[in-house]
Image (cartoon, rainbow, N blue to C red; front, side, top):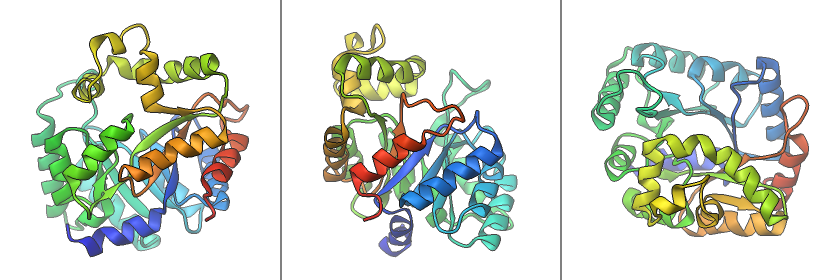
Length: 292
């Protein structure tokens, strides 16, 4: 990818976005969330475990925020259907949507097979579709070096999940200067260390059983002991930003200094009756200067 095609995406999503687990929300609540985040100044709303079909009404319900799937599993929707839906969405709302793709996990997909070959084939099919999805409008949930190579060569960049600042720096080196790097960062707005780590561990527990993540953490210098018993303090502190607004802001800036163009902030441990942690989003927006 050349720099001009990725610069437009980087500009559209801005410095900060929100990563939201939206699978439990009613469509109307998802749309409300997007409108709230747009008003707060965030540049992107990344819909957790979503598809283009689920993203389309969120785009239609907002005016300017970029909406992305984060991610759409390549096993969940075929490339031809995905390309057709992307074309419809682009025609209706030009430049408002980015297709985030990932290979999911062997623990979650029956018949899981070679992730690199499967993603390569999926991108080939997107390119060969009647209405191709341009590389500049897709981003990959890449962690390992070979998938990062695909993100560099055949997409606008990478959207890595559950990574440390040091791993962000490594991803930046692998991608080079041009592609967009938009890591997710879990945020716990809780100053008490014990309470904050407990909330982070609750969010982390599911992912400790997925080998794509555990393998990446082991490659990043953590040990099997770090992965045991819900995760060590060292692991939790590296993967999550917790504390008051000042401490969270400092951790976000670590990601930016490591080479992130955009940080997708995922609020953890801030329940709300309607599933929309509005007060937490407002605190986050103020902490990072989303409107700036």
